[in-house]
Length: 410
Image 1 (cartoon, rainbow, N blue to C red):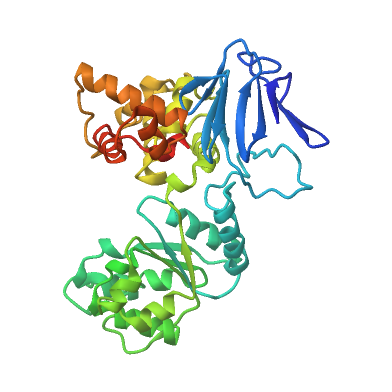
Image 2 (cartoon, rainbow, N blue to C red):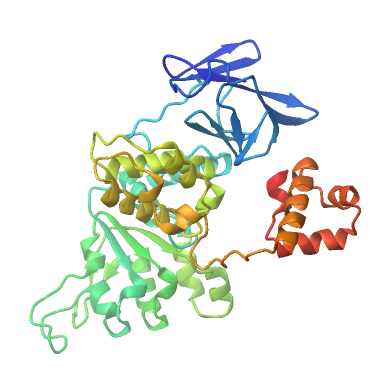
């Protein structure tokens, strides 16, 4: 694969070779080449003017690993050994802002296969349970499922963890006038509001045990009895639930009803954390940029883009959205620069991460030697020990002390 500057973004196939051109004035016309070497992929700088950077290191030749971040000029690339693209597909995949729905679009193979199944199930009546860490975009996926379902009713989100325990049933199922003090008129409730549409039960694992039986009856009988009522009301709704908790464990410990779990978990979706979807960062940043910034906004400078792509995003899509919202306020209509991003993103240190230890001059020399050896031996700790003539356990102690990750050098 050849990478270089061109008048427009395009990809050209010639036999087994692929050439990608990018309109970046900081790139050389023949900037770099990616080629196989002894079962690995390597990037070779082909005498570019501004050099090539792989995972933060300027290089003439570097072994690429799955997820390597490549910087050529002012253009950033992620390298992945396997992508979900058919052999006959176009060499260059373009996503417009309308295509880049962060809910059901991905470039990651494992997540793509799951999204295809979600699209197939979405138009059915099968209840769906979305599981994953906080901030991974479970509600975005639920809204996308509703859009694909063809149901004409409303999408009604309910945060089960935010409902006061003594008001859960009246909020969900409604109440009749006079049912309790303060019930001065009939209230249909959230379940009936979703009639004909989709009821999204977010944080279902936080639903009080006392209300789980009542919800189970509603789902089984497809009718709801308002608090203080004498006649049930028939309903037609699709239920999508979500949680960051381990419902299997909660069922085993009798903290969550097994029959309600069986009713909700018709089709289970495990949403990967953003750290496992690094190839989708461009899609997500593009979609959020379109939503948060003015239509004519110029975008991001190279330093800001590099920081966004290198940050680990432990708090997932929610953290990314907040970072871009902050940048929008600070940058206004100007190009987003590094100074507009939150301190955590600029420092590369997530919230709660330990602050870096200040090393002595001697320790810094040792760390530099270990890093150089890890890079030379591609993260092989045994090879590093031999090269430095040290015991392997000593190398491991240094690696732990200096906060190094051998896998990042492979």
